[in-house]
Amino acid sequence: MNVPSFQERYEAMRREILEHPHVQGFLAQHADELNYDNVERNLPKLHEFISQSTECCGCDNTEHCTNYLKGFIPTLRVVRNSIEMDYVRCEQKIREEERRDVANMIASMHMPKDVLQATIHDLSIDDESRVAIAQKAAQFVKITKETGQLPAKGFYLYGKFGVGKSFVLGALANELASIKIRSVVVFVPEFLREMKNAIGDNTLNEKIDYIKKAPVLMLDDLGAETMTAWTRDEILGTIFHYRMAEQLPTFITSNFNYEELEHHLAQSQKGDIEVVKAGRIMERIKALTVPIEMRGKNRRM
Image (spheres, rainbow, N blue to C red):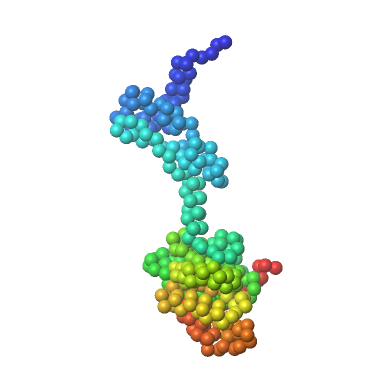
């Protein structure tokens, strides 16, 4: 059998390495730092370098990357007359980590995934009110970027069922996450049910503190819950009072306008009408938010 000798195979591999365009370009760039012996000693590194893609392959997921380290591309440099190889993140890896960082800036309690993936650019503009809301949301983010400070007031979005109020919260949360502002997005009915359960496992105060101290708080579907004096005064009242005192931006969605929500808050399971206590909660909500009516077709039908 005519089997090439080890020396022949080595010479063939050596020629393949040294004739590779990227290697030739690197050696030409560092000709004054590298000599023959330097290059010969580092042939294994150069072989590892040319055996992989030196540019992002453009795959849709770094799990499909063909390089030795998924999501990383090799680069060469010279350190004290010796060739060193580093691995740096490819473009896809950077995009995936940026998306993960954005996701980590949004804490969600009982919110649907599609809501949390929304962006302002995705908002359907089919009504003047939706145009105004998109503009106000973009302005909120712009002010935060330019000043480095969050505006003290959020929005109170109210409108009929299914017009996309929750979607606006998710879009705004993602825009804020892109500039490293953390939001907590809460579906109110489930949250209040969870607070009742938290009494039994002694986590009530911890959970209320987590909500009330959020840099940006978004409360979805306020008014859809069955209201009790305890959830109104001890939970919502505590949260709103703290955020008003600390001037922390709060966003709320509801099917009710201010007047209708006040009427809802005045009702209790016992049938009592507590106008004064409901009015106290509403004063805090009005101090925290700007009311905006949202119109449009029902997207859930």
